[in-house]
Structure formats: C-alpha cells, structure tokens
Image 1 (tube, rainbow, N blue to C red):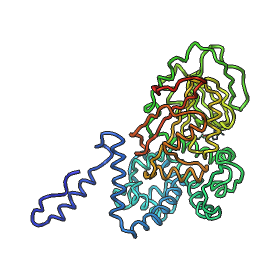
Image 2: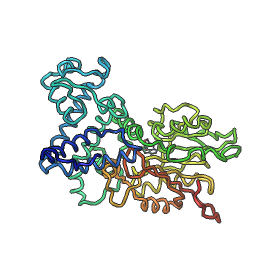
Image 3: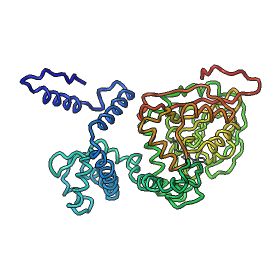
Image 4: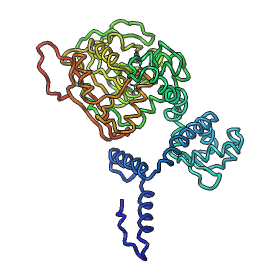
Length: 442
Ligand SMILES: C[S@@+](CC[C@H](N)C(=O)[O-])C[C@H]1O[C@@H](n2cnc3c(N)ncnc32)[C@H](O)[C@@H]1O
C-alpha cells in the first residue's frame, strides 16, 4: 500500500491523506497477491482494520441486526430461486428489482428491501438505484456446493446457535462429549442419533449436507498439492494380499484379489468422493485398487468412475480392506471427540501392514490460541454438530500415540484457502515388532 505520508499541498494534508488511503484500499482486490498465503494474511489484516474502525454501536448494528437480516434475506431469495432464475433468463446481466420480482413472483416492494440489504452486504452490486448486478458471491450460489450452504444454515447452523447457550447452561457448562446426546440432538429433537444418522433419515437435509462437504473442499488446496501422492504407487504391485470388501449395501463380498495387487488407497469416510475424484484424475491407472468408503447411503451417491470400488463401511468396525498402502481420512476425525476418534483409528490400525501401510490424516491443526476466525468457527461448529473439535499438533500426537501409532511426518500447506491455520496430512505408521523407528521420509 502506498505511504499515507503525502505532502499536504495547500494545507490539505489530512484530507489528502485519507483520499490516498481510500484509494489504496479501493485498488486492492484478490489479484495483486503472489499466493494464497499472502492474500489470506491481507484478509486477516482487513478484518482487524474493520475492528479498529468500527465503533461499538456499528459492531452491534452489523452483528446483531445486519447479519441475521442477511441470513433471512438470503434464505428468502434461495427459496424464491432468485439466483437460478435470474441466471437462467438473463445470464450475468443487471436487472431492475421490479423485473426480478416479476421473474420470481414476489411483491416488488418486498423484494427491493431484500435486494438492498444484499447489495449493502456486497452480495449484489446496486449499479443504479433499483438496478442490481450479480457479484462473484451471488454467482457462486448457482453451484450447489455453495448455494446449499444457505439451506444448511437454516437446517443446522442457526438451530445449533440458538440451542447452544441454553444447552450449556443445563449441562453446567461442561464440554459436550457425546456425539449422540449433545447440542445437535437438543436442537433437532433427535436423542440417540448422531448427526450422520439424522441426515440419513432426512434425505433433503442430508443432500444439502453432502453439498456443503463439497463446498468445504471446492476451493481448498487439493490434498494432492500437499502430499506427494505418487509415492502411494511405489512398491504396490505384484504382491499377494488377502482382501475382503464390503459392497455398497454393507455386505461382505469375497476376496477381490485375483490380480495379486495390493490396494493403493482407501478413502475412509470419503463422502461422495471429492478427494478420490482428484486422486483418480491424477492416477487413473490405479483406480481399481482404490476404495471409497462411507456410510452406504452416502457412498451410493458417488459419481466417481466405476473402476474405483465404492463400499459401505462403518468406521466403528474393523477395516475390511487389509494391507493397503494408505488409509486416508479427510475431515473425519475432527467430527469426533477423542474416545470415538480413538476407536476409528484402532479400527484402521487393525488392517495395516506393519512397516508398509500408512495412515494419512488430513485435518486442521490449530495453534494454541485458535486465533484464526475460520478455525474458531470450525471448532465451535464441530462441538455443536458432533461433539467434535479442532486439534493442536500436540493433541494429534497424543491421539495417534494412544492408538499405538506415531506421527512420522507432517505435510503442511500455508496456501490453503481456508486461511492461515495449517491443514495437515499426518502419516501414521504402525511399527511391527522389533522394527526400527523410521526417519519419516515418506
Ligand atoms: C466431514 S465429512 C468428510 C467427508 C470427506 N472426507 C470430505 O472431506 O469431503 C465426514 C464423513 O464421515 C462419514 N461418516 C459418518 N459416520 C460414519 C461412519 N460411522 N462410518 C463411515 N463413515 C461415516 C459421513 O457420512 C461424512 O461423509
């Protein structure tokens, strides 16, 4: 940013100065940064700048009125299919609020009040009074992986936020640790079911949730940019290993191993295959030795090409694919409190070949102070949804150690869109008896 020490010609130093600052701020956009890490740092600095500029009144007006009003305006527009119909009939062109009201069948006097708040919140651009243009945000809502967040906000995030204070008061401010009896169950009146059971029995909400998972992934650094995935293909051929697999209905099928090839990659809790699709794109030749596992009702929705084997599998039971090169879990363990996470890890360990198999954990690792807003938001959201949490590096070492494994190496990516807090891939490897500790050059 240019210096604000301008020369104060005609005694107008302060006015000139603020003009220069405003000019510099206006000229900043997503482009001038060398990489994602730098852009993220600038964004955090901008949030901090807002906090310095805002008065307490402006903060409460924005936070206690502006944001709830934005949520409801967005949800009404989503229900009216405003973004989709606009795009379908007029592409990315600007339209008057009256025309938009006609397209979606809404009282024009009502719609313009909603649109004004979306424009004031930078979700639309008011190019002239009463005329609106889409922005990158409203255009993103055309993709279900973003647009479905608006439904998920009303399905889960807001009900959880409403319930959390009274729930914590009733439980004497103790940390929720039971994924089947916590804030989610109080908010959604479903005692005894975890959030994933709930989404299975509420398919419309479940579908939104799966899209939300896709949105979490859509603009993050791919795991293949963090981890050298070609190493998974080394030394995996021409070996015999017994494998039983479970089909998508959860039934065990016979050994699938006539080709004497070991499984390369097992994506455990892989949802509909966001990460598996990336691996498939990079290594299609390994597809038939790859396994996408999730709950049966989730994995059967997968569009990942067929050579990849799709399996219904409950990760609270022993892993049926034995001796694979890698068992990969992305965003799985942060869904669970330590006791449950430990069971999941032990179930994977039971299938691992000592000194050969590796466990790849792809998750957040937060700093002690949890001072990144994405990390703090994730942490509290996980607490509400699933009694889960984000973990520090020490927490991860401890958890993996309690499962009888050790962290061999951590791959990090500062450039992750999620922010400055690290995303990590931990490699855990079970040691066989008498096996030496390895240097971790995996
Ligand atoms: C937060 S999502 C992460 C999904 C995926 N790895 C990704 O990054 O997109 C957690 C996944 O765990 C799955 N899951 C929950 N309980 C499970 C269980 N008992 N066995 C297997 N998968 C389960 C969910 O269906 C969901 O797809």
